[in-house]
Length: 118
Image 1: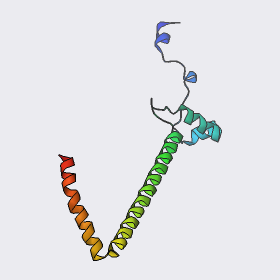
Image 2 (image 1 turned 30 degrees about the vertical axis):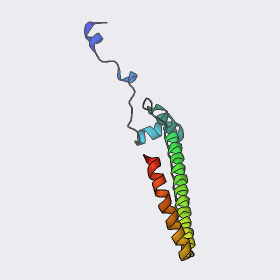
Image 3 (image 1 turned 180 degrees about the horizontal axis):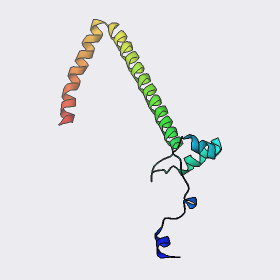
Image 4 (image 1 turned 60 degrees about the vertical axis):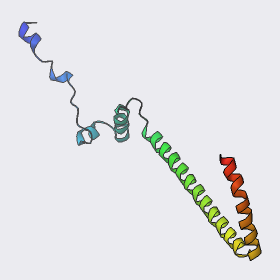
């Protein structure tokens, strides 16, 4: 070989032309689903990243947890409101003497509570 031939570019037959994804040239050179599978296999996954299916499953689990939490809080709120209504109803049924005795009990407990806090 002479020197000019050594510096020359390699023959065009050894370089394969690659068509951009989605172009008609790539569809005609490979079968439909096999070409897509090959493209998806070549897509790099970021290091430490999760697959799309794993991300969807994780998000669904989080959604279920939030729904369960919201349901629990709603149930606790309803129970507290019912408890308040029951107490109010019972308080309305107290007589004057019952109310006076409750006030006397509260007054007698105040010094005990204050002494315990000190």
